[in-house]
Image (cartoon, rainbow over all chains, first blue to last red; front, side):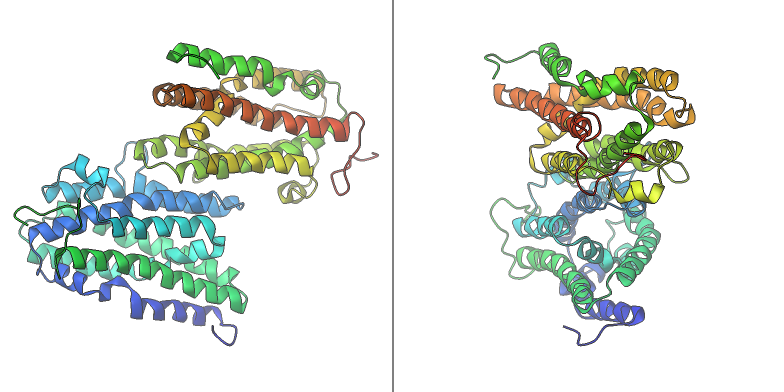
Amino acid sequence: MSSSLMAPAELEAAIRAVGAERYHDKHPFHHLLHGGKLGKGQVQAWALNRFCYQSAVPRKDAALMSRAFDRELRREWIHRILDHDGRDGEEGGIERWLVLTDALGLDRAYVVSMEGALPATRFAVEAYVTFVRERTLLEAVASSLTELFAPSIHRERIVGMLENYDFIGERAMQYFRRRLDQANRDADFALEFVQVHATTLATQDAVVDAVRFKCNVLWAQLDALHHAYVTPGLIPPGAFRPAGA
Amino acid sequence: MSSSLMAPAELEAAIRAVGAERYHDKHPFHHLLHGGKLGKGQVQAWALNRFCYQSAVPRKDAALMSRAFDRELRREWIHRILDHDGRDGEEGGIERWLVLTDALGLDRAYVVSMEGALPATRFAVEAYVTFVRERTLLEAVASSLTELFAPSIHRERIVGMLENYDFIGERAMQYFRRRLDQANRDADFALEFVQVHATTLATQDAVVDAVRFKCNVLWAQLDALHHAYVTPGLIPPGAFRPAGA
């Protein structure tokens, strides 16, 4: 626990320090993914597992809204759900993710069913939904703050994947292009919210812990992918098996 | 429990039978309200207590969405939140309710604080949010079905209150005019949802019970108002006291 109350800029620095140490851009799996070191089957495994996370995000955001008595907070937060689920007559982020899995040659019904996803992926994702449902509203907001670190990973991913994989084209990368702007706007709002509301040692600590928790949620998903599809390549029973694996 | 599986039309009839017996349009307080039999202080008490319900509805709907794995269900349900909280640059139902409480001469900050609301009102409202959060998704959807009965009460209310109270004008009734259309569309969707998904004796029974529960939530709020502000007029400590009461 920090021994003295942090000024808003110090709190931001403490949050960013968590990202510098723990955000999943540091994970070896991402280095392989972005560096063109994976085969198509491994990229498929990543995309269909990551779908579990994408499709849980609106439930997580709705859980947060269900606890918000402040109408202005709800009016701001609802954009996140609309961004992911889509507005009327408009595709959202989940649809754009399915464009990526389509482009990778995965059957859409299979992806949406999540049948082939790793159990560890789903446990991590649901732990995130549960955290947002059960912890304080402040911690729920804070757990979104990994978005502060997301734009750089998205930029790196777009360049790396387009350059390194002949089975990935521009259309498949639409999800990440769109998130570059959305994540910035969302992260700015959430950062200001925690700076305004975390005004005690205990709550500032809880905020930083929430970011740490969320980094763990992301990291654990890559650990599971790495174990199943890279080293030792031990795919659990029932999980997706790349062609020829 | 019904002894045999109901066809969709029979299920609708069973739901409507609950409304015919238990919907709060049957409550004596509503007869007094719509018939012009209440004083301004009593109408104020109704409006500020009912605000608790209005302002909980988006939390309830977000709780439902947080449990919906089906993107299409979320895309439909989110309209309810937008209707109540408002879209960008547009007032929503909660704002229109505050226009009504403004018109009744109530201080807006006092209304929003819910400090003067009856504890029984808040217990009933939060029981509804909890029900939607904890019961099956089917029961959560079904509990919205009192909207099948709402348009007639709204029409009766608009006419009755405009005719009978000189302190109520057209602008104050905007909330109810707008709900006439919204409630129809929402209720049609929810009715079809339960007709499609309640395909066993147990789930059909749970659906009808959910409507009964929701009627109880509405009825209990009027019981509390009646007891505090009509007969015996026993206002609990801390609750709103009309001028001169």
